[in-house]
Length: 155
Ligand SMILES: CC(C)(COP(=O)(O)OP(=O)(O)OC[C@H]1O[C@@H](n2cnc3c(N)ncnc32)[C@H](O)[C@@H]1OP(=O)(O)O)[C@@H](O)C(=O)NCCC(=O)NCCS
Image (cartoon, rainbow, N blue to C red; front, side):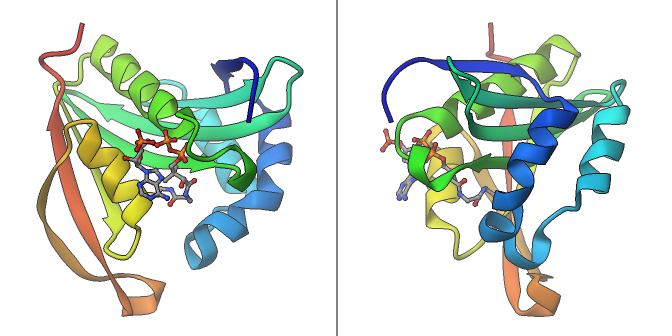
């Protein structure tokens, strides 16, 4: 992937653009378009963004929920052709910065134990493993690792 990456607020058009990738990226955990629309509607507690090329082509998307001093990373996805170019990290850092602006002081997330790429992304940005949720994914077949990061040091 070459060229500039722009991060913007997620819109309904982004939902249409991301849906063809959703099942491919998230399998049994894939969300529906209606689910995304419900998420976008809750602007008070949720913040969703998309990464695009300068020409408006979708590269990735992400969302966070903030309630009080706690943020939860809800989703991060990068289209396969745009990976390993820093898009996932950029989306994650944008979510954390917004969560901090909204008053969050710590962030949590769950990730599949077998998702090395995501675990490395999160660990690289300061998330530390808290524990394991047995059988959290795929109808009880795959465990989740829970991770946490403090946001107090963010500018
Ligand atoms: C996880 C995901 C979002 C990463 O997106 P990305 O844009 O490729 O990630 P980045 O280029 O920003 O990489 C940031 C860091 O993550 C780690 N990383 C990302 N992909 C990796 C891979 N395939 N193998 C090992 N480490 C990887 C690296 O530490 C990388 O830093 P580096 O490139 O300087 O070594 C992407 O692979 C994806 O969409 N996966 C499917 C959906 C998913 O699993 N989402 C997370 C659910 S919790």
